[in-house]
Image 1 (spheres, rainbow, N blue to C red):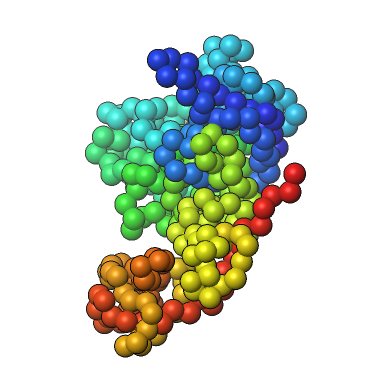
Image 2: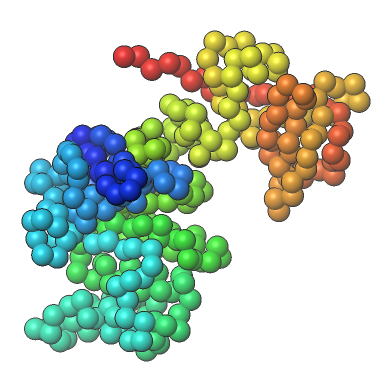
Length: 331
């Protein structure tokens, strides 16, 4: 549905910044694609390039085979079949009611249709009970739902969202994610979202695009990338994996010629007063502990679930149940 070919975006100034660096990608119709990466990786810039809000320095973005127009092509930037929900609720009229914020996106040619469509959209995002409230009086999560309503009321084919759950309380985040997934399932809407939160994208997305220093480090199915990442950066980003070089892996009894990733949940420990390793730190994480374990030569992070009453400096043995080897890329 959407293709990017050799796409770059360079910002000139006192310091030249290459935000997106010659990337190629494809986004499938009717799915949720998440662009994920560390701060400054280029993910938000890529989203704006897809929408046509930014002019690419090189390359192109095509929507259904047609070039996406940019600022030089039209007065109001942004592709007509797409809607963008930004982080800061800039498009919302804070002092108008929720109903008016959403209804204002429709023309007055058919007032009955306008009223029914507004009501239907508010109900779909479960904020019809807020219709008479001012946006300024809403919580961050409620404002986000209003912003999504405004974007969806004209039935776009693509919804672009930049860090959509940043200002949503944790208690309501799952509910909003499920609502968006339901809308995609019911309508065939295509969603492209930017996120830095692995838990968010693993729960929602059908496909991931992993950005690092303006380039695409990895792309594919979330389940596959979590278990079999192509890049150590992806392993750290999605699973907080332990990345070990061959000499470090050998300390654990693992013979390999290439770097490996060990997920925290794939490490087991056993108390042993004469063990070669010890617990360096215990971090309480709620329903589990994060243990920092190892010796002078190697340090690992382990998820301990269920939590046990263990102390710092306790001697242990370490067992790695499985690990992933990063094979060198072929030319």
